[in-house]
Image (cartoon, rainbow over all chains, first blue to last red; front, side, top):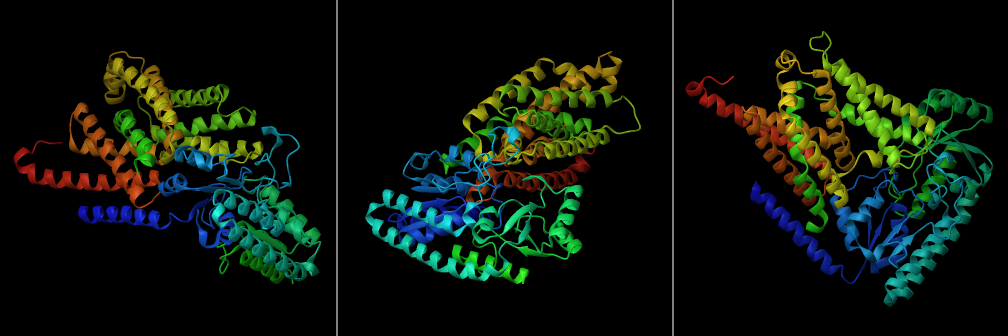
Length: 304
Length: 279
């Protein structure tokens, strides 16, 4: 058994080495979350190797670190993170242990996706008393396709700076992504138009950008405060508001407590809609565009 | 691999000796869950610091956490009566759930995202920094030396309470000292390695060693050896199969415990007719 284990380990090391050699020509890109990973793949095409740390179904606030994360970060040429404190609970210690100067903040190898983006819900007071999880504003910005385009452009610039040989390809891929989003925005907008102005309920405050883009109001949450589990009196208030405003849908993500949403839906006659911020978290959503496609069609089905 | 696993390995080599030693005390006293209760008291202190809007890495927050740990130590030493219908473990369990629930209540008023707090209280052995390891090691040396110099009374209070009372020791005060030191050790180790690991390091090597040896010295050395083997093996497995490191170490300990206790049972059965006098 011991020998078997040993050969496995040697095999793993060997595999790792050969992979490193064959990938040498490609840019080693690490993305903290699957949405950044998906866009990085679109932009990088065949010239980059993208590793995503968090799983699509994992809560982006809490991600369990594994040894490979540190290894990947050590070997990375480029790191894409949100830069808006969404990963604050787990990324800083990983980076500290990876000690890779190429991906430090301010280096060409570090893309902070929120850079240059006006975040919503920035707390007025920047003290702990402000009562907001994320002092820089709401970090769930990638579900707005127009922001995703800006992030893609940012990533393309960073890829081109680190790997100028393939700059033309990165720019072309980025242009193509932009064109796809532009075409799709027409389609998504048309599908959601009949429901414009409606209010929705969400478990966590992660849909403000989506709401803003497609004309919904998502201001009622099952959580009384971000990260705090629902309390009975708060749920009673949510139920009353849902009834009063005739709200039909509750958006729930894979790592949130669906049972609570089901209970509220039962009381109010609304529907629980399984939503997700990350490509791959719902069936048949391998890419960013497919994910938004699925979100739009699920919402249409629920509100019809 | 070493670049990534060096400091976790250092932590697993430098730190467990004190946990193994304290584990022998804790198992003997029959207060297995004291570590989790004390860690929870400390995190309740951190929650209070959050409510007061203190910087969680500063001294005031640390002092509040320390204060709550001492309150826990006081509660557990006052309630640890000489003879009582209520087992000490019941009080510890109550202390744990009430502290945990109080933390939930406090945080619901604090409106903070709790990821930072959780991250601060419950560390991950994979991500220890050199400074963490040395700070923790320094504290362990101080506590270890205290235990060494005061070993006569501290051992008597844990291992032969009746004799301690007969000799007129202020058992409650010694208990308070024991719990306070214990709280410090547990809280600092939890903050770099997590709750699962602290529990395993305290209990598993002690239980294995008790089943293998009779004297305290032998048990301590054996337990230390088991802790070293379990910790380093767990880390290696976690690296080669890419598993969360803390959980990998805990499961390695579980397997070690089964192997060692079943081996010792077999070994004893074979020896029994000859030796026959083992308890």
